[in-house]
Structures are given as structure tokens and as C-alpha cells.
Image (tube, rainbow, N blue to C red; front, side, top):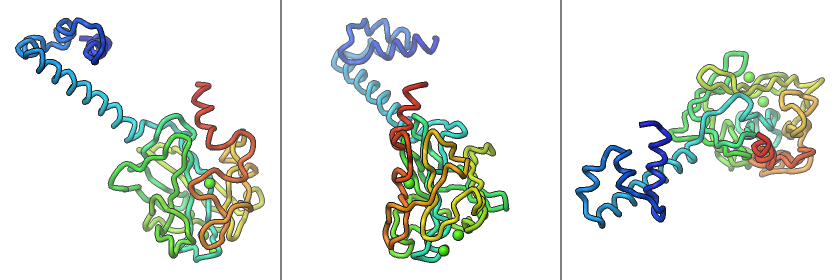
Length: 248
Ligand SMILES: [Ca+2]
Ligand SMILES: [Ca+2]
Ligand SMILES: [Ca+2]
Ligand SMILES: [Ca+2]
């Protein structure tokens, strides 16, 4: 049986369709079993199967889909907090520009100096389409400067206040990369995050990044962890993923 005839057979079993469900069950190869049921039990079986199909689709939505390089980008970086020590308050923010929810559990955070950490969340760690996820070295809001941390990269080490790299890998494939230089091209802030200014700029180009100077969080440092960058220009950042999806 081809996949399309299988799907057509499933569709014809949906409640309310004007189908010959006996024919559909023949396609599915279960007519003998099915016909041995009385009409009431047939209806129950149909409802169970429909519920299972719906549950599978929802599971696919919740756990995310396969990602391509560039679908998840690094959108904002607090490499040098001022309100708290760097050991307590460094973070960076991911942004999903794709039209799929993306599960980054099992991905690797790396730099070019040998820092590596495999994300192990114990469950899917989803960057929602058009949404954000914040990774940091401390998820205690009383000591991390007062931001909400979605995932702690324990043991990964520091974000250099000068030059450094943030790399995301999936199964050895580089999915995102940031090489910042601590000036002259990139911002070199203290107590302010570095933030991408958004499309049409390139997130890997330091001249498209600025210091966050508008929004303060928690203990007073400047940044927008988990939300649109206030410096994002042009297209409103949170809608960019949808616009990109519409043009595919
Ligand atoms: Ca630092
Ligand atoms: Ca600092
Ligand atoms: Ca580093
Ligand atoms: Ca942000």
C-alpha cells in the first residue's frame, strides 16, 4: 500500500466524512477484524484511531522539527554583566527565525578554544518559531542579576569580555556561530548586552550589533533576555520568522 492511499484511508475514517469505511478498512488491511465488530464498536475504534492520529501530530509539534543551519541564531549576548559577577550573570539569547519549533536538546555549545557542553535538558528544549530561549551560567534569579534563565550550561566556562566565539552544533554540523572581537567592529560593553539589530542585517556581522541602552532588567543591567531586542530595526523582530515563512 502506498503512503498516499494509506493517508486517504485514514482521512476517510474521520468522523463526519461521507466515506465507505468498509472500503477504507480493506485498504488498511484490517477489514476482517473490523467487520467482526458491531457498529457501536466500529465507531469507538474509529474515534480511538482518530485521537491517536491527532496526538501524533501534536507530539510532532511539541517536540520540534529538524533544523537547518541558520534557523536558530544567536541574538543577544551578556558577556560582561556589571550588577553581578560574570560567574553569576552571563547569558546569551537564541532566536528562532524559522517557521518550525526547534528542539536543541542534545546540541553542543562550543567555542574555538575547546569549550564544549552538550545540552542535556532531560526533555525537549524548544526554541519556538519566532521566539527566544535564554541560556546562562546561573538560573537563580536572586543571584544572576534578575533574569529568567531557560537552561544552565554548567561547566561550559565564561563568555570572554573581549573576543570570543559562541557556536551551536547539532550532530557535528555547525548550526550557528558568533565571532565577536571586543571592538573595533563589535560592541565592547560593561553592564549592557550586545544585541543584534535584526533584519535586514546579518547576525554574524558585528556592525549589525549594538549595546542595549534602553531596557533594564532585574538588578539594573541593560538587556532584553527572552524578548525582542529594543534596538532591532526595520521589521519587528518577533514577526520576522512568520514573514520569512510566508515567502517560502
Ligand atoms: Ca565574561
Ligand atoms: Ca563584569
Ligand atoms: Ca570562550
Ligand atoms: Ca533579546
